[in-house]
Length: 288
Image 1 (cartoon, rainbow, N blue to C red):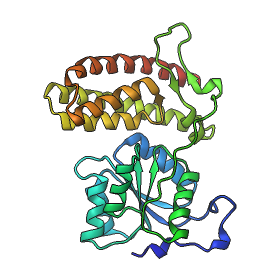
Image 2: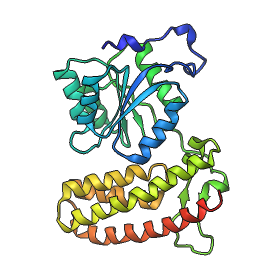
Image 3: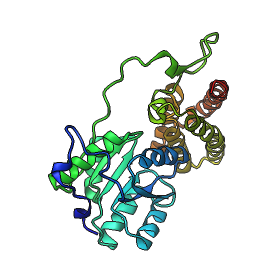
């Protein structure tokens, strides 16, 4: 399928972006293994009028692509079984398919940007992202008619958010600060949707933490690193900065096989912080 299938009439552009109906009727394949992020992306996509299919990893994405026609792929990078890089290389080299592929990633260093280009990705978006960022990336790629990646810059540091975006037990200074700014923006005052995302987070995180614990006990550092990355991805929307930074450091240590003697204490700290987060979020949901 040609990239031209996504090109739109320039007269349909709005100042600073695309019309909201640009993706209406388009078929989008979303390769994402994190359930919380799946739900968030689906919620955003519903506003576009696009048709979308979810694949849990790169292998599933390839299977979907073989069975159906799509106009665009949003490809997570770190997935089990087959990651986004491997899947993209297969799509480009084996399937000979030039469908636009946009990476979804929590990181975008110079080295990563070069790899996006080498495997044949057309652009990248930092997670979590809103529709404006998606439209801007498509605009940059399709109007310029290029095949090298365009990395959408991260949003500027936000101004201090409204007090209601931050949830913390005021009587306990050691309680982690839970920042719901991103979730409030994405939910657009839909409290039921907000509760759904928080519930999914609370249901999936314990299993991820158990996996981290299990892989640590087995000293399986590759699997440990991937589980920590999964936890970090879930924490990108239910933003607990101290916990997100902690699991990010755990991921890096396991990936680089550095400071492994510190991981036991970090895993314990992760569990303690998560227990406090549960208390905070459960109290928050009782307000809705």
